[in-house]
Image (cartoon, rainbow over all chains, first blue to last red; front, top):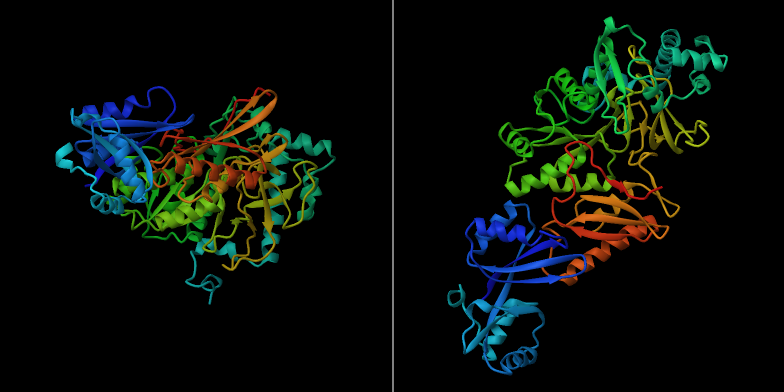
Length: 142
Length: 440
């Protein structure tokens, strides 16, 4: 099942990260996970929140440029080599990964959740199911 | 049939001088030139002194070509004679004063008699008519009201035309959009950069712009690429209107439906193109600095005023049938020009380059610095929802596309920096395009 991820453009200067997070805080939107990709000049903040549609509106009303991207949450066994095993399946299936990051909020002693951004998320869902990789639903995560 | 039924659809009677046969127009120009030179000589010390120095009297003007004997007037002349030194009418006859914002020191002050205001309204009516604005149109005038000539100039012109005028003035974007939608605005007057800002905000706020048909945009240089973008995105016809306070305000010239060059209202403003270095008058078609002489101004005649605007007179007749000549689009001013590592750069060139890249809007600022004795040019460009990607790689590609597009046009290496939306100062009036931090 695909999840909606919000991406924001941030300039590389003080205060840029605080503004969107405060806006979400004021709107009482819970942040489930975030990751920051950065270059020398700018950064992209990627967020997964409980209510992405409302969050997008809150951020846009605050004058921010927001993108909604579909990502795929994948369950990984919480043991040495667990992620490598999943990556092997992805590689065999010939799926291109743009980026990935950890979804810490729903980790347990047995499993971890990794968010994947695939080139083609719809194809990824089909191929992953066939390869026996466990894709989580939003109900399981949010 | 009378002359003004000849063009398709006819035209506003006040537009008749737009279609005068050239010979007749030149006769009017000569007669008016002689009288304005006499007025300037008789009433303004600066003009009299300069003519005396050259051994000229008003009688020296026997033909239009004789204008080339007269001295140029430049902006510093207006500053040096601040506030009223160039007035040719006593205060009893002057009914209005305007002043420029004056970014450097004292503003410049301009004056109008009632007859001057009537001429101003007339050329504004002719401007609106040329843009296809008529009685029955609802005109939102978002030029600033006040000392700036834009607001009141457009206001009285639109009223004299018989259109319905909304004197909203500049600023307060949300109210502007509400009025456009709720009042069924069909034509708008403002700077092109402010219109872009309005159009963008309208998209975000889902404002209905569908009745808006015509934009009359002026007060800052803009490129053909920017016009294309406005017309495509907003579905309106975007006309360039030209003017400057020193001459009268908006309404010195305007684009007709052909949108190919600005027709100068030559029966009131006499245009010349000169070589900005030597001052020599250039033939039609050659590019140089536009020089204007007011042919009918009373309160403040302006003789051979150097506008600093770079353009050329288009020699061919316009398809619209007007006989008054056109100047090519002014998208640069000689004082807008910045020299970077010996290369002349105009902001409009940067604008054109940025607009060539899909999805970008011309919200940009040029920042000049000097590092280790070498000029550096940085172009800050705002990220819009259209171009934003959540992948670093794509944003970096965009950055490189923008850089090479600018480099292709300027022949100069530049650094493009993507900045957050709405971080560059938005103009409610004129956009500030260049920040020069070089200590030269």
